[in-house]
Length: 487
Image (cartoon, rainbow, N blue to C red; front, top):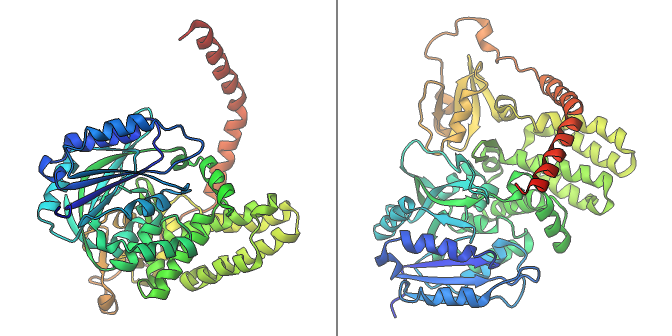
């Protein structure tokens, strides 16, 4: 038999008919000729708490034998705690030239599937990345795309794409990227999971093997991703994982990210400067990747006040702080405050620790783009700030605290725009003013009152105290009423 063109791999726990729903959208939307050259591998990761109707799944898969080149149903002999570990085990059965790993909580759209078929028929680049949109379990969507492009089709090195989206956000888009199977080195993947942690490990594996390999990005939505509770800040799922895996609650965004970045740096696939330039961007969220680590590192130290099981050891704390010191030297004051906070969290009562922690939180967790991305600034020429950017350096007016952030949201950001100019490393020192600065005030950045966030927080707390109790009683009344009337 001829090796398949594509391996469609679906790791699943087999819940709620999601496998059938996902496959139905693919079968009805993908080109029949491509389906006939595709092997389907459904990998059941058996979970003791999940009831699985094996007969129903097997019966459905039998109807697909005539559609796909081959259909294989594998059942795990062990429980994999993460989607990445399950996907790694499932991909071992793949034989296709290209591999497409798909989470079962996905619904695929015909427009994206048509583009996928065209890509595999005549690939303009070795790999493809597609856009997506999210719905919750009730079908509601906020209509936010996962990524933002100015053109329908754009090529970019894989490393740069991850730098612009974020390792931890790239991983949630399982099902939106297709690549040659040879890049998914099983030994590297398993090694990353064992030494760094499973979360985001497939993204890191491909960074190690693909690097500057070109990816063609399509703005069209390939899939609808199901919005899960932890996407909205619900921590129960992560808390349960941490307890079972015997790791800290914020392990994936502290040790996981730090150790995976360090693995890439030791391998020569990344530099500390690459980490400084990396952005975490999905839908309305925009932050530095390094600040994602800072925020969760802060929260992990904070957890250690209340729960001794969550308290980082001296060696664990030093490992993360050493990495932050090398990757983010501009945060040297905050690094010192974190060390002070950690030492106090070991000995002092919580109210003493809070006095140290407040300025740290203000510096790393503000919601205003202009303030949060301020630590990207590495220079100033006249009335222009020079900021680190994944594509080089971003030159924009010091008075702009908002519009420049668009240059970080767009994947295929134009080099020149009314609000900015992108400069490559080699051209930085040739930068000069085209016209003279009109006044000394133009040299100063637009004033951002950092205290306004504290004022706003206090205002919201007053509103909550005033209205929460009556609102809660009103909701209870409606619930009782609807229960009695059967509505």
